[in-house]
Length: 265
Ligand code: ADP
Image 1 (cartoon, rainbow, N blue to C red):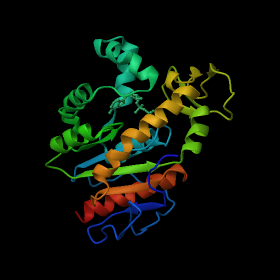
Image 2: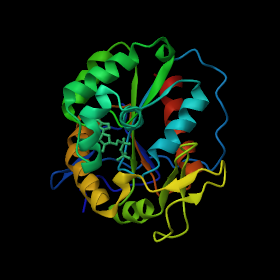
Image 3: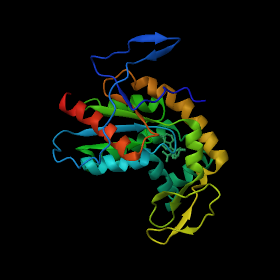
Image 4: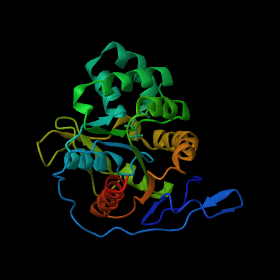
């Protein structure tokens, strides 16, 4: 079992609501708001930069939510996993360096990752903010990111989903080898290479979605994410969102958290 906090609709810690007691080593926070079920409209006021970090186990819906957030705020979605997989596909020097690590589901070195993200955040399209998906994954990376983001508000959200649900989801996850869209098939034994309903490409299992690798990735996630969550959890800008909800509800909960921080910084 992972040792992460029990999910509720959404739990936010505002300056008025510091942790209220400590129960056997687990800091307990007062439960807060539940988000309305709604389609989240695109924001028209883009004056405040929005820098978001999404944390969550593989298969928690982080990628989907990151795309939605990026679209809503008109900011880039920076997925370190996607950058690394792209490098492997392109056969670049970076790709050759990380290919084995990716297939094993282990972590790429902090030095390499922080250099890569520093370079990406230096691009002009991040001036109004960005959604970081997959970074930071270690406390070292979190500290380096704090340094890079010292002048702006960093909003950190954890999408929490229990392990059993993750294993079920990963068994049915496929990605199109042409349009790269991630999709879900009806059962885990569904054959690879079915045509993609959107573009006709092949729906295939990602090599790191094989069940053995998923278990390793979950163990790696728990070991690395727990201290990262501890690094952020007392900040007012940190929130936990229940990732078992419908993705519209997850998006609404995130939007509510971001709006509350932007309107009452
Ligand atoms: P997941 O689908 O497990 O959420 P990602 O797509 O974010 O994973 O990343 C895929 C792989 O890329 C990871 O298993 C890891 O090997 C590597 N990786 C991505 N981001 C990082 C990071 N910040 N630090 C170290 N390794 C990373």
